Length: 238
Image (tube, rainbow, N blue to C red; front, top):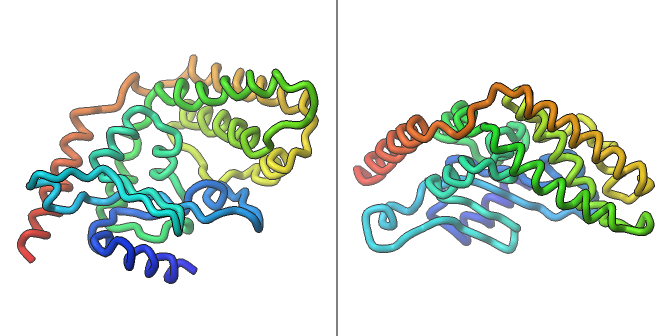
């Protein structure tokens, strides 16, 4: 399936053939919570086409509908990662078995992921979750959106991991629990109590964390300048 996916992508966007840093499964397939009905979601990072760097055009991302894919320009990706965006940070921690493409540049970016993990994850991960806990609490019955509920529990758990350990497991060890929530099998009162417990644990992790306040902008900028200088220098020699 991976080869067919890549072939389809390269036919639609040929420049990605030699511009990708990484491409990986995203969403439920990377969390271990996919079902027979789950779509294929892909997320990746690429060097922008060289003429958009040196010329008048700009490039931020490539989006496809089939497969459902978003590939961010390296600069755009880094800007989002520095803000602690949950979906963006995940790409730096996704299991290798869930990657379709991972170049030496992609490996280097993954090895530097600690530069992007900051206290901001409390607000980016927890902010989404608390809004959705409030929505759940307004329900008068167990008729809730299981997919959203599973998502918020997972975010609280991975946010806590980042704050406590500076890393997270994208492939969730409690995938069976998350699948049960996704199927709507948890009573609403139990789900709300569990969400409150997870949020309280995340708050404690935030109080104790040794993470930096903000991403190391100077180190990150030096990294992407060097990577892009090497890549475009080699590209223009061809």
